[in-house]
Structures are given as structure tokens and as C-alpha cells.
Length: 538
Image (cartoon, rainbow, N blue to C red):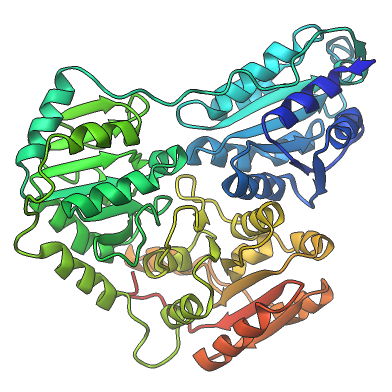
């Protein structure tokens, strides 16, 4: 006989899910058993937050929704950060929580609070599982998580629902998979085609929605055919090979980069927004062009952000919209005859070069990009290092630099790298973290040890919350609460069964990274840098 948990697990498997992450509790034992029996690998983590980021890393690797499992009360509460991240960073995450049955909750209050009320502001939907409606609930949950802009969906599963046998009929396939967005029609399409047809200086800006649509090939072909320079958000890095002369890299957090990119955008006579969601961008990208600028917004969803004006909105997938726009313009029409994009690319390259004294964070990032294979997947934690490495690290393909770009939360880089390597299984992975960020998730080094996967962790050690300290000084505030002592990360690595080494120069970094690529276990490259090493860097 089938249990309620069997149906939930079976529907997740039907949607392509092969891994679940979390920490068990008595209220989710039936769910764990069913996930295992359905053919899903349950990965024990040390904190629910890390489990959610591992689930996201797996989604970037195989395209299936991430699955996070938490028990009642503290388990559900621990996951709030990563669920909020999935909401803002457009990650399809199925969050399963165990709960006591409704009748029990009326008089048994130990660890009991309303999970749904807590989570509703940061999920696309929240369901309470009911016998007799589990199949339709799972169809809805998975479809909502994947539709439009992906996001988290919460499912609260009472113990009796998970454990009870049921005669409910259910389909062992996922029948409600979202369909591709159709091409735009109407007067805005006519306006967009006319604007693009006559443009002499078109520029494109692409972001997370284009990545989630899988529009990289179409954007690359479009930009190359019409000689259009491309700026991306950090999540959009690699939509066009960043070694391509037309690629101007990621933007959104670096004032130095904005100082080159925004003037170019304002010289454009046709700004093409291709799946671009400004949720990743800081204040410099609020109203970045005049209200009368010619702007075409290609979007799968209604944009309500209020960050900028547009001339024409195409409610469409990026791929069909580019096909229509291409028909409006002759391929041999000249673009940017003054060569301004090439000049900006050269200025950006010079502005984010390695330090002239031979060592520092920029030198470390350039050295690692040179040593690591082209197919490497990099992850970056929040902090000063993330802004700099996002400007330096060139991605040949999308989803090769994973980070929290909308919520910008710390503690994400290591579990993102772990989840991607576990699910994808072959591409080298490297996590860039600050010393404070690594200390947030040191417990997951034991998970990394147990998984026996070769993740490289580059930790920038300056014993400071460098980005916050920089902001303190910039606002002429006293130094408060941003400095701390130095942790012996190589010793920590050894204690957790990995390899660790201090790095103080580029030659050692090159040698140790080469060795790390041949190692079966994890490696921590502890790169000591000077206090205030990021001053003027980004």
C-alpha cells in the first residue's frame, strides 16, 4: 500500500529530482524513507541553510528543482535565510517541513508554530499536505516553483499524512511542467522592431531570466550577428562567452565598473533588456538612463520594480523575441562606428588588473582563473572579494559563477560548490569566500569530507569584514564590530580531513592549485592579504 510520503517522493522523482538535502527529525522520518525508496539520495548536512544552498547548486547542475527537508520548529526556522534567497534569486526550491497533526497542535505546543505563516512572505506558495489531494498538490507545487521566475514552494507535511496508507490514485509523471513563453505581439512589438531597425549604437543587458530560460546560444548569436555589446548581471555572466570582444562582463555592484559601463549605456540609441531583472543591481542602476531613452524590455513576467523606464515591453521569452527583432534589421548594418565598446572593454580590463606589487586579491583571482580549467564552476560568497572576483573571473558559459546576487547572503559559496559538484560530478569547482564567510559554515567541511568530493576553497584572510569596514570609513564612522582574530584555516582543513595551506604569493598559489586539482578530497587555499587590500579595487 502507498503512503502519503510515497506520493510526495514519487512526484519529486518524476520531476527529475534525484537529491534531497537536510537534517532529520522525528517528524520527517517517513518522508526520508520514501525519498530514499523513490531513488533520491538524501544528503545529511550540518545546517538547513547549507542544505538549501547545496540544493541550489544541484539545480544549476541538472535543472531539476532543489529539495530541502527540515523538521518541525527549529529546523523550519533555520531555513528562512536560504528560502528567502531562493525567492529573491529565482531558484526553484521545494521546501518540505514536518509538522504535528492539526488536532495535536491544539494542545501540544512544544516546538510548534505556524510554519506557513512564517514562510508565506518569502515563497511563491505554501501548501499543507492533505490525504486524497497529494497528487494535485504536488503538481501545483512543482509547476509554481518552475513557472515564470522560478522560486521556492513550501509544503508542510503532517506526520499522519506522511505515514498513513492511502488508496489515492496518482500519476507517476509530472504532467504540469510549464510551457515555453510565446513570442510577443501587438503595438509594443511594432515599436520595438522600429527602434531596433534604425539603431546605430544598440547595447544589450541580460540577466537571470535569460539564464533560466536557457537563452545563451540565442543571445550569443544575436549579439555576434549585429555586433551588439553585452552587459550582464552577475548571475548572467557567461550568457555570451566573456572572452568574446563583445562581452563587457558582469555589472551591478562595482562603482568602478559602473563608471565605464553606464556612460556607454547612455550613449546607446537602443537599449535591449534581455531577461534582465534589476533585483541584482545596486542604487547606481536605479534610473540609469533618461526617461525618454529608447529601451526594449523582453521579459517573461510583469515588471513592477520601478527601477527604470522602458519604451516597449515584450512579454515574451528571450529566444522568440530575438527571432522577431532579428527580422527587423539587416545583418550587415554597422554598429558603434566609433568603437566605443572596444574601448570600454579595454578600460575594464586595465581597471581590474592584478596588483602592481605582485600580490593581493586581484592577483589571486587572475592567477586562479589562469590555472583553473575553462569548464570550472566558481562560487562566490558575499563580501568585497565577491565584487572583485565577479569583475575579473571570465565565464565561457552561463552558470559558471554561482552566487547570491539578489539577497547577497553570506555562507552560500561553499555549499553551492558542494551541491554542484555532487550532482554534476565532473567539472572542477572552486569557492571564493572571505574568512568570516567561511567561519559561518565550517561545520559543512565535515559534510564535504563525508561526500568525498574535490572542492577547492579559496579563502581571503584579512581578519576583517572588509566591505563593511570600507563602508564605515566611507561614511566617516568609527571602526566598530568589523575586526576579528585570525583562524588557522589550514589546521582546520586538516582537522576535518582535508588539505590546507597558507598562501602569500602567486607562485605558491599556482603550484598549490595545480596540486589541488589532482586531489580526491577538499583543499583550503588560505590567501593572506593586507588589511584594506580592496581600497580602490572595485
